[in-house]
Length: 422
Image (tube, rainbow, N blue to C red; front, side, top):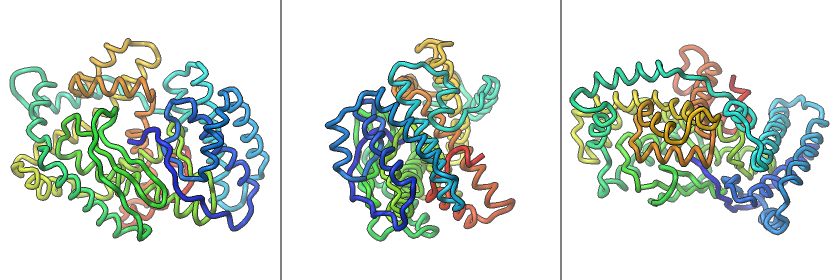
């Protein structure tokens, strides 16, 4: 996951060719930085000119003025004729959609209430499908057969998973092994800058399980929250999602191709509550499938022995994790019902313990996330589905893994929006 943090880096190279969009792009960046001064964690990463950040901190523009300026910049972008160059046309559309999300965020911080579906469309350029309780009941029935025995299903599932929590003394070896393997496999498909690198840190007292803080210059800090126990499959998910080919690769490719090669300054800032998040989170989740198509075998043959687990138990464990992943959409439904005022906080939390199979502690953590980030959860599962469908459609029926990687990496290095994926 990625949450609000302003980072610094080197100033991007100037555009080789002047574009009428350049001025609007600069104003857009400054408005995003201005919005971040209102203390809601709106900027996830920034590595543009330091003086722009200083100006934003000094000016502390009121929300109303930010909204007015955003509307004026959007009009300026609309006045630019649609370019014949496909990538530049995408840039124009990207700026308009990001500006609309920024204006929506201003309205929300000013007190306007939106429904869950209207909010996701305005902020993330997508709507989450509705999933009935019957769909989750079907998954729960499969889990009941997979983990039989006395006691409530949730307790049985939790007891079973506790057997595969990564021991504290094995944690670093497991995570570093998984990240190194994800990196090795990713580099078989994409040439990253020779200086690209990441730092791995372990933290506590965070509202998330893992995080990538992109610092610019193809550098990231990957943090893992050790406060809540993590099961062994999470090592593969974190390695791919936060690192390779997830957030670290996504940001590095945008920086190289759009910021440094083209001088498009709008990509030096990442506003969290914007369509960029659906592409970032969705591609990071789909990247797990691309880089670890053999995830079950890799976890069994490499990570299980490393963690001291019996590989003979890997098959049942991995089947359970695959079923639990299908319950991720329950988070969307809980957030929709809670944010639309149809259920209270306790009811939403209890719904998550039943239909998302979350422990009370994790359900509480999810409710805190919903309160802070509202509808952000759709960026993971809905984002993953949209990216997967886009890659498979563009790659063509029966495409090789290499061809799917090609389409995927082209998406990461482009200004495409969620609506472009449909």
